Image (cartoon, rainbow, N blue to C red; front, side, top):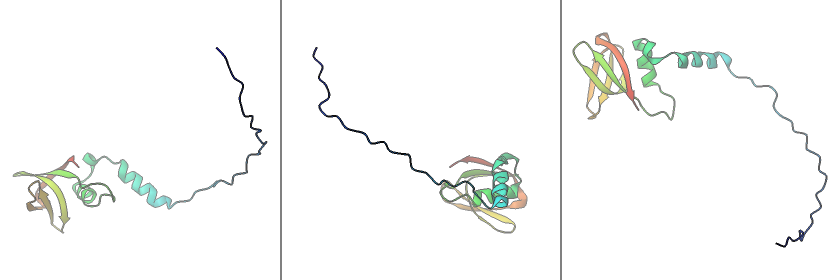
Length: 114
């Protein structure tokens, strides 16, 4: 087996590394950030009914609307919360039929999926 020497020798210059000015400090609106983290850390099942309704109606941008099950004394509704009024909430079921439910009748709200 025959080996050949390299055909081309490239002279590498001695370069010094450039000095990089990096950001050393970072400031945010800490109170807003802490409140949001505390809210996110609280598990959905441990939230009050008003917190669950607020969470489902005010999801961050880009997060698809979540399906939930609203349990009342007589029945349960599965669908997406679409609107909140003073004493009622509106839910759109899987067949796109809208129902209004009195907040006083709600026993619990459970997450189903996206």
